[in-house]
Image (cartoon, rainbow, N blue to C red; front, side, top):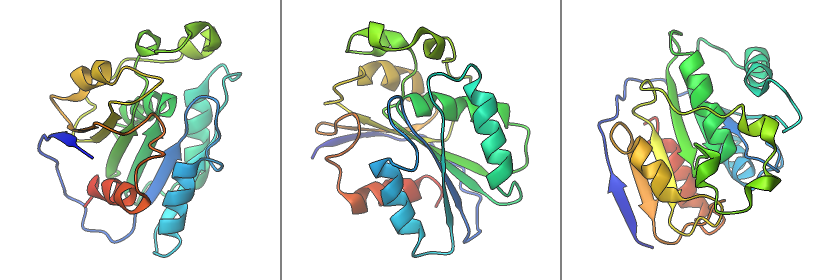
Length: 199
């Protein structure tokens, strides 16, 4: 597989051996049932770290508040966090990061083929709930020093749209063969990418 790496300087200040991995799923799936989360959980179960799957659905009118409540109930804000957001979950991930920007907690993030705007969807937008579309936001200038994974064979989203938004302040990896869910990415390589975001 061929990958294009656009790297911006990471700020690696975390020396702790403990990490809280927080996964935020995309539209039409669940957190705990996601194959990506199961891979993260299997990796974490062999360490002293924690893996948490947040849940949301398209019928909720304030998804960010729902996710924030789950975080406050499950996260230790005194310990570092690595957010992993996939597709629509990537949009909610950077919204949460922006909301928590004043916290002293060390926070890292990985966005997997994130949905930035419904305009980048390749499939019929009528299937995407209007209420959910209204809850999407563009990333602020604070969203930097993260890891963005993009697949050129993403069948749902236009990867170039996302690339142009994140390339200047983040590490962006574009792969010729990855699809939207990264189902064709080897598990060990997937975990290495997750670890790369905070090592």
